[in-house]
Length: 358
Image (tube, rainbow, N blue to C red; front, side, top):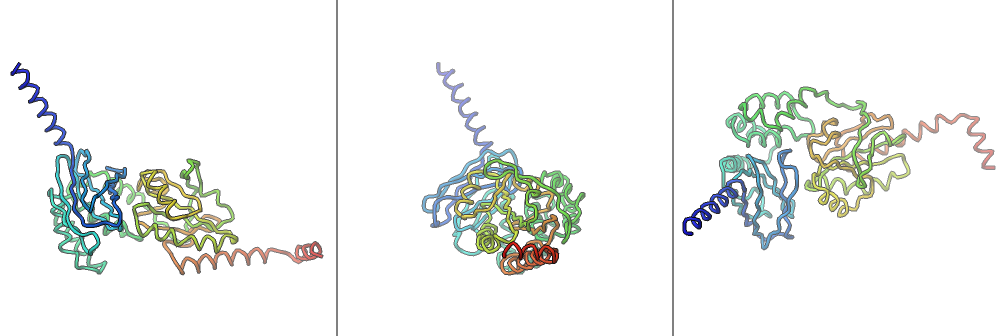
C-alpha cells in the first residue's frame, strides 16, 4: 500500500512539474489604475488573441501556455504599453507606476533583461532619429536576440514610409534562427514583392467582412471619395483619429464622401466594444487576422494609425493625413467633383431644367 501511495505521489509531482514547465507566469504591481482591466496581446502572429486580466489596486497575476519565446504587449487602462517576452516555464515580475514617464521594471528571463537594458539607454531620448540610431546599434550587437526583432519592427518597419534598404540590411545582420522567425519570413516576402504605392496609384477591389459578417468591397463605393482608415482597439492614437472623423463624416455627408474603417483586431468582443465606445457610425470591417489581414498586406500598411484617400476611380489621392489637412483635401476634391458636373451640363440641359422650374 505504501509503495502504491509513493508511486501516486511521484506521478502527481511529475504532472505538476510538467504543468509548471509549460506555463508562463506574469505577476505585476503597477500602482493604482483608472480602472481594473488590463489587456495582454501578442506582438505578432505567434500569439494572436487578446486576454484580459483584472487588477486589484494595481496588483495582478497572468498565466498562459506558450511553446517558445513569445513577444507580448501589456496594455494598461491609461493606454500605457509595455513589451515583454514570455516563454514556457518562465516567471516574470512587473513593478512600477504606469502613470509616470518611461518604462516599468520587468524582471525575469534573458530577453526581458536585454530589453530593459535598451530602455535604460533610451528612456531619456526624445529625438526619433537618435532613438533609431540606438536601435540600429543594438540590433547589430545582438544578432541572436528576439529583442532585435522587436526593435526592428518598432523603429524601422512600423513607420509611415519604411526604409526597405535599411530593413533588409538589419535583417542581414541577424542570426539564421532569427531569420527563420515567422515574422521575419513574412516581412522578407513582403519586401521581395514590394512595389510601393504612390499618389495616383490604382488600388484594386479588396474585400473584408463587416460587423454583421457581410462582405464589403472597396468596389461598392462608386462615384465616391473613400477614406480607408486602419486602426485597432488596443491602439490609443488610431482610436483618437477615428473619433476625429465623426465631425468630418457629418460635414461631407452630402458631398460624395464616405469612410471605411478596417480594424487589425484579433478579438471580436474587444473590437465591437471599441466601436461602441467611440460612437462611430460608418462601416466597420475586421477579418480578425491582425497584421496578416489580406487588405492590410496588399495596401502595405505597416503602422497605426494609417489611412489613404481614394478618388471615385480608386486612385490614391493622399496617405496618412489628418485633422485640418484632411478636411482641406476632402473639401478640394469634392469641390472639383461638383465643378466637373456643372461643366458637363450643356446649354440645352440648363434650358430644360429652367423650363421644368417654370
